[in-house]
Image 1 (cartoon, rainbow, N blue to C red):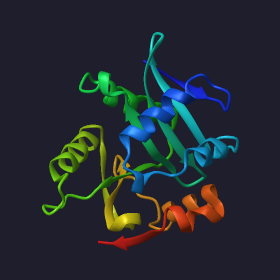
Image 2: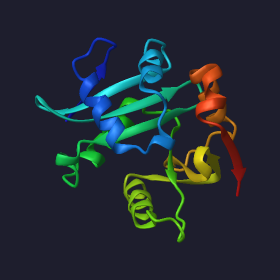
Image 3: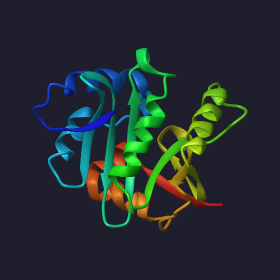
Image 4: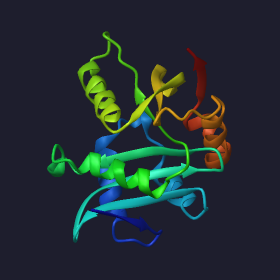
Length: 183
């Protein structure tokens, strides 16, 4: 498996957009045009996951000196449960070796209708050496997210919202308000 950097003119963008719209609920999404626009800067990138010439999914990361944040990660539904997600996580760890790598996953909540899915995601991330930090975030839609990092390397709690403001600019407070809550 390989990661291929996706440029603004890439043939992968329509597949990425289609999967993005299917894989993430509207409340968690950022306008796709904004994601594309931010890839022109040095601190955001789309990468496609391939096995030979077969497109499998994508990852969208944001980064600065303190943190690499896995903003979106999705495997095409036809290729799920085949080890590609874990393979993608390994490639991410290689690509950003030596840096603090973080991501968010919905917190377990017995009242949530998708609690079993939340548990599966957290188990998947733990299997790939991503563990909860000493803070979580309350975000748009009233959903609480565990902030996980690779090998328990924690950034400052404010590093995540600062990165989001840096990359999303004035749009951040409207499309992705974040409140950091220390445990």
